[in-house]
Length: 323
Length: 275
Image: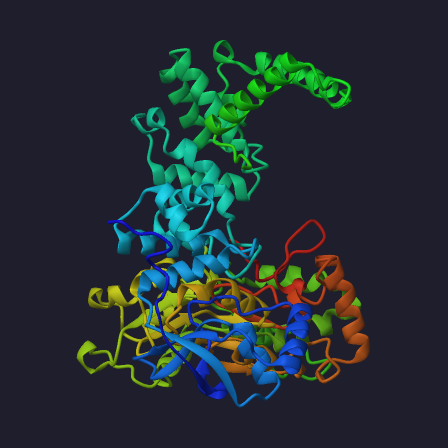
């Protein structure tokens, strides 16, 4: 199914004036809180010159009311100024998909949204559009493709785990990052082929270890190290040994992550060497005065090549890369 | 908060039996030995105070929970156990989500209390993460279930950040609680679309440290605060400074004073929150 942000935009029908009190806020606009300062500026402006840009509303058949699609802040100011009427452009009632797209546009404006509700809304969108392609979903919603990927990872967890991310108590709420970081191990093909492995038991045990700070688990990023040990074991053809160690680690709260590190498959020594040379290169690069080296074309080309390689490797390691 | 016995009333077998009867069914067994050890922590001079604190503990038993939840559902217009007689879709959801937490337990108790244990009611009980897919509209009803609201702040924040987004088409939404601070209930009603139904409302006088609580003298309160600090330095009056003497059979809320539930090197609570 072909869907784009343009085709999903509501179509205008006709402009008119409606009673301020007869309007209703958009239920798909979860942004209930507005910063006071910009609102004060808007109110002053409306007080002086009125509402210049009409609100976009639709007529809700179920509610028998005009519902605001765009212009909630102008409407709040109009109420505060006791304006009897506001100018509106009436558009056709949006579909579920159009409403969801509106919601995502609003999401883009706020950084501190919880990811799980976004993921659940994205699930509805995928169902409605029958499209799971991350690039297309990112295009429709305006979300970063990395956010779409993260949402899809969260949706792969059973409902009881999804609900843990929705707990009202911040001290009990499990951060989405925990499940996102665990995903790589939980869905590792080699791990899933281990006979004893059960996704649910594994997730539950890792959650217990992480919550109670057992097995030395301190940060969600510790699961990256776990994944690295498994990858190294696979490359060194030591998966049966790794399977045994992973099972022991899952069952035993005394064992630390280091238990998963098979010495002969260890790459940490070379990682340390790389880290040292990276630090050296970083410090040399920092000292460079760009103007002084302006004509050193070969050097700049080498830097560009290095930058591209670093970006590729970061992506391969599932790191978020700023565009 | 219950009325304690008079000052100087003997701490005898009869009083001990009353406590044991009152606190029967708590998740961590409350025995005579444990009560004795708890009282000993107050020191000889303050044994009477410790006994009056125990007298005042409001213990909510399972049967009281069941009654409250039956009452709660009866108050909600439009509910009928037969699907054909209900208007719109109805879903019941635990308000707190972590496994084994109060919302989970309360949802189970709610179900049993209202005779909905049968499998035919399974599809009415949902996870919070099921809600967007349920596509609930203005004619539908969502009932969130929990035990207690102390300050209301968490419920409001949760509504703004999560629930309003999970329920965009604005079904009628209830928050059914066993108990709520009267201020919390008002705050939630004012700041969210949820209709709060609480079986029991707590007032300022239920806060042991509040001036309105007259069961304990200023000197009593001063000494209790000292002991509460020993039990929990950073929240001596309980979460949100609630100062409650409230214990549910499934768990003592952290809004209650820490000498009731905290267990550490310096203090052994009678109503430990974990087994």
